[in-house]
Image 1 (cartoon, rainbow, N blue to C red):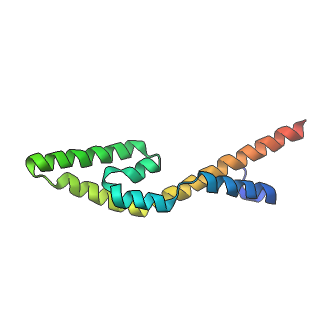
Image 2 (image 1 turned 30 degrees about the vertical axis):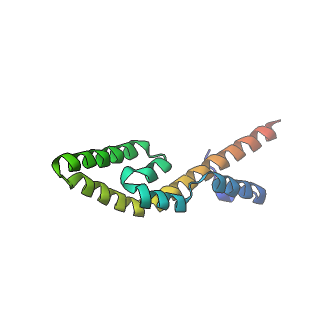
Image 3 (image 1 turned 120 degrees about the horizontal axis):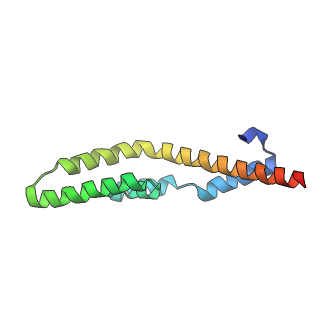
Length: 119
């Protein structure tokens, strides 16, 4: 069943908000990781976007190696643009994460209350 925030009591709503605050990623930490280690995908690792983080890391490390060997800056440029775009995407990632935590917590609360009502 799909439940929403409107189906919750005040106590349940406080519990949902508490779970969200406890589990969500900190946007300040994400931006610090992005600022200092963005080219290496640290902010993507933080948001558990492991596949794209590994791709970004490989692109940057590969570009550094190529730069040293062949003086090629294309990969570094691409990784830099990618990291810049991520700066605008991170608030959306956090919002989707918050919504997922809320959904999971509400489902858990309602399932638990339905089981208790059955007894």
